[in-house]
Image 1: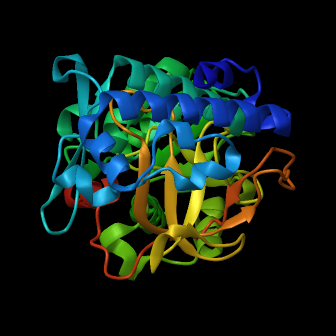
Image 2: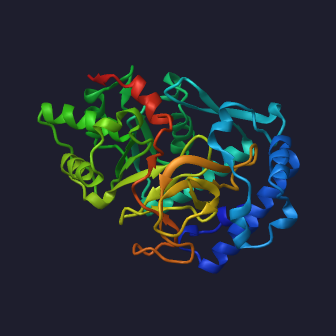
Image 3: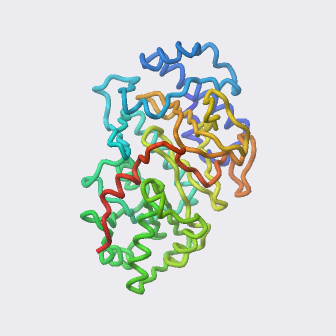
Length: 367
């Protein structure tokens, strides 16, 4: 299958552009045919849009694949497998209390894991080491950012610790772990941006600075959500975190995902969000989501994700963004496109939702 060919590629983020496009098209075509045949709700939806597998011939036809508005996961169980095959139900909450449920089977989870391994290999340049997670351990919460990172990180990194304990950032525990001379290096950190600001305030209050290692990365994920009124410009955020942990600003990266897709998008050192080579991103006109907008124009972000096996991964989100490196271009960092601009935000009027919202409800203050 096309998706397996990409996932087995030794360096997918730097593969030949023609090969990447060929394998991506193959993977998405195979995925669309599979879900059309195995998910009755999606097949009915496609027929209502007068689109079927025989109409998906070339790369230009990808924009015609019917997209599921992200809100349907709050109303329907969308499955392309038997429910007895489901291993994990990923949940994403909104401010209204509504919950999306995304059903993942073993194949979907295995593909997610392989995809994140490839992404982390690319981002860290193969330097595994330690990860300190500014999220609660999996037993305390079922937010997707916790479920997915707790499944994948221990399989990749040499050691993982959670610094949110009992709903608070435990500074003493964090300092004890980070000062351990036997801790694998480099030491990386991962968590939502608001948690880093909480941590920064606590460390500054106690006149504590932490010097991480050459090659250490600080990765954010989950966004600000209901902390939007406290959000700060990305360059200001990177400056604060860079000084606090004594690492270069280019080692502070943001990541983008959601419970409804099966891939992670992450920044390069130039702060462009690199779309994994198997994932197709399309920017849609908010007034007419059937139409794509041009490169550099803002619109709603749509994903065609062939890694999803247990549900159709053809999603129209309520996130706003724009493509700044095209499908057939190479980023200034040297890796292949496409890339999204670093600023991705919720569409006006869309409810705050997602993992950062759930984490914000859990993380109260630092010890």
